[in-house]
Image (tube, rainbow, N blue to C red; front, side, top):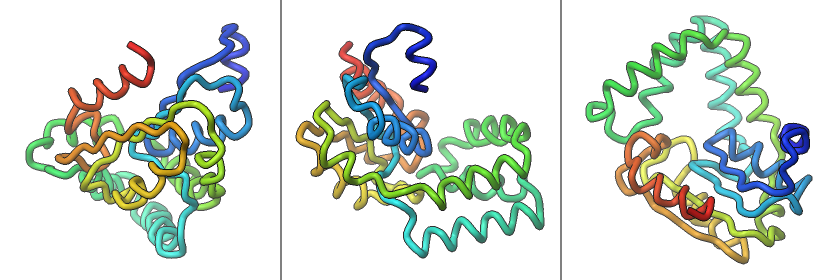
Length: 186
């Protein structure tokens, strides 16, 4: 991301990261804090995986190896939503798009999450505004973790999506968009 921004001649940016994208955003903030205008963690966390989360991810890797990626994704994708019936069409579309993922890519994705470092210190030291978008029913990033982290930055903004799991951009798009526009200064 840093090289891309330099190539495009951007001096600063607002970095918005959903889920694993938030881990990338935090790594960017750690390495290039002067390039940030604002940071947004959208259903994401600075915490490294605890032992229980590592075990869950390792079970997912085992399932992918044994049964294939789609078997895993048919369970995982609906689990990202609070109201699966209300969002059945979106889930089906995501499952259709997910056929592009190879089992190897899914395994690498999970291994990267298992081995990522804790970046809580980044939130404690960051000087730019940090926006948190939390899903009250998020199983991937527990709501309590998001609340704990939202108190760390000096300039924090919190949006709670009361009817969302991990997919607030689909479950409560209007509220999510309002926060994203505020984050980028629109």
